[in-house]
Image (tube, rainbow, N blue to C red; front, side, top):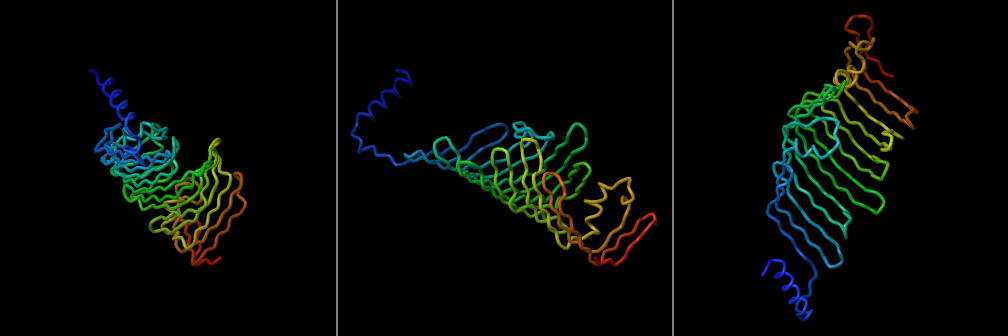
Length: 278
């Protein structure tokens, strides 16, 4: 007897038995290991109830980041790295309702053909929690970039030290950051809120507020790369600064700066200001 005929016979026998003997409230699935596209997915478990609601968990072990990245339209070519993590998911029918994930990346490397973007030995930790409401995703997440160097024209960050926490919404054409906080080691924290229209890659609104930033460390990392070959391209700075800015439909609508004990001097001796409070 073939395997197919045996299965059909088994189901026929089960269906012929009294239903009370086979009352089922949920179905459970457990899989020890699955190999997929350079990754090992282990400890996969899922449950399905008779109303079509389901939930599950899985662990990702030593995934090959270069192979996993091939499935996504990234602006760089990922050539190296490992990824480990775990995820929990739930939904109903064919629809995913919630995803929770925690991922750790180690020793990643990437570059583009033009040489404008590159990274070496990049490592970090990412957590995401997203819930589908029927029209949009409500999400929250955190990113801790704690190792490696990255060049992203014209910025160069030598040793990580960047973290981000935020929450917002994701609809078909609009990504909203309702509240975010960007932390830069030895510089300070920046609060952010924005709306980004995905269809034309345009920022509809942006709110930025930062207090007590260290200008001595902020200038060489964030300001000088944009000022090369200008009058402000070879300076020394010290002191603290508060900044707030607003943008609407690509136009700057508000910009405020408060200086505290601020020093700036041109290294070529053309000008200097000291202990400015304004």
